[in-house]
Amino acid sequence: QQQQQQQPQGDAEHARTVDMLQEALLRPPYYLLHSMLRCPIVPSTGLAEALVQIFSLRYQVQTLVSECIAHEISHTDGSETLLRSNTWAVRVLVALARMVNGPYLRQVMGDIVRDVQNNPQLYQLGPGGAGSGNSGGGGGAGGPTDKATRKAQHAIASAVQTVLNRLLTSVAQLPLLMRFLLFELRCMVAHHFPACEERALRAMFFLRIVTPAFTAPVEHGVADQQLSPEALSGLANISRIMTAVAHNAQAAESQPQMACFNGLVRENQRAISVYVDELSIPPPQDNMEAQLEDLRKSCTNARAGAAAVLLHFLAEKQASISEALLAPSWTKVVEREDFGRHLAARYLTNILIRRVLSERGGGAGHSLSASTASAPDAAGHASIRVDKVKLSLLDRLRNKSKPAFDLSVETK
Image 1 (tube, rainbow, N blue to C red):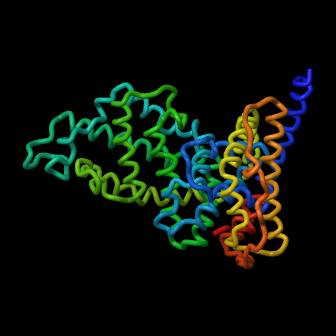
Image 2 (image 1 turned 180 degrees about the horizontal axis):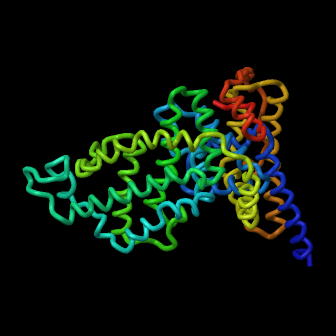
């Protein structure tokens, strides 16, 4: 009877814990979120997907995008490394892309993936194939290129060009949340790394969204079942050429047998530049609310699981998160914002204590040690400087093209 009485109490306590977690994560200026993004990368825990789900349930996924981009830019070593490391911020952006881009990517490359799955031999390039002894793909010192290799070269080049053509003519079909992501990225990169916007957009769209869909088609919603190793090898050849297009690099720089595709890479550069320009203009807001509602509905049943993932991560990383919350390295520090960071630290402790209470009340077998649940000591931390940012033309355009979001605090 006592256990039956404890179960509803535990459920109610857990619900209050989840509500507190959402409130702490979504409270501007998002100190808890940025502190979590500062934590070292660990093997896949579902944290990125859980953050997207929690923010989506409150129609705040655009805020999450803006904060993750700001965090990534402020913590990168330079424009050359931007979006290249697999940080938590990048993982969150990629997780959102996976959640909303599946139907679009299936429309663009689904039939290509099916053709490779049905005819994997057609897309194979052996060590003596393209470019062997001849950068043009014809005859050379090693003898003429055989017919099978020429067919493979043609099939791969045709697949790459088909996908590029479909991308270039389907800007209007790209989900608005992705266009918002690319627009935000362009605005922030233009402010911090002028003249590097196109490189960042290419890295985000092609290297983080398009090419991974070839190497992991099931995870990106392009295929329904796992492909054979031979088919994945053929898709990897297509992905390599797409990567060369994104980098504007010679396809033979790392793999000489791909040299025959250099002409295709060169010929598409101007079109790709125009394409990323079109992708990153302010997205229309007419249908944005409908897309946000669809995303929220898709995440409704995941609330409990997402909260469990986040609470587990907070419990494991409380020391690192508390240290980040109370560190003197935040760019803005007015007294009320200073108080806000300490409030977030206290919220973190309170949430974890409530988690223990709810699990014990509900009979769960997890516990939290007293040392982990103790409140962080905030005494003696250094002061933080105020760093005011002027509104640029891009900022003003952004403010006119979308609802206002609190981007007042950037972290370094």
